[in-house]
Image (cartoon, rainbow, N blue to C red; front, side, top):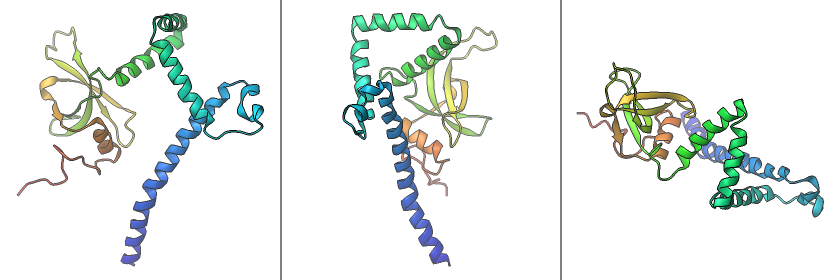
Length: 208
């Protein structure tokens, strides 16, 4: 019976990661493929050619991104984007959502920025208990008289869903920077600590 259980677990370890990868990729492809709905019905391949083209929506999505990027990179495009944002900023609810998403996107995607580039450990939620977080802002200041320390902002994600978490403002000297990549940090969090990256973290304690 134990041999049978071992074989079943070995089979699951082969198929579960593969199935999850296929499902996630399929979801992404299906989502991007729906970009074709942006075209008027009479311009869609099913109408023009008489049959649909699998993956055409993905090509259309990439083309839209490239054209938008090329347009936004020149002076005329920047003026158009500024005009568009000025309109959005006049709509109360839309303004708040748009500005928040834009600021977060700019911070994360900017290759020259320092946000989400460092993985750190800090003692949270209490002394003696360590959590992994991502440095999001190295220049946090406060006007409170009771706080005169050099503070930084750290995002401490929850597991296994790292899209939620807590923002911690902690003294810089209480952080321990880890020599691992952001991807390795996310793997550690999503796997609930099962996948331990090589480097400063290790499954071997080294204690005698």
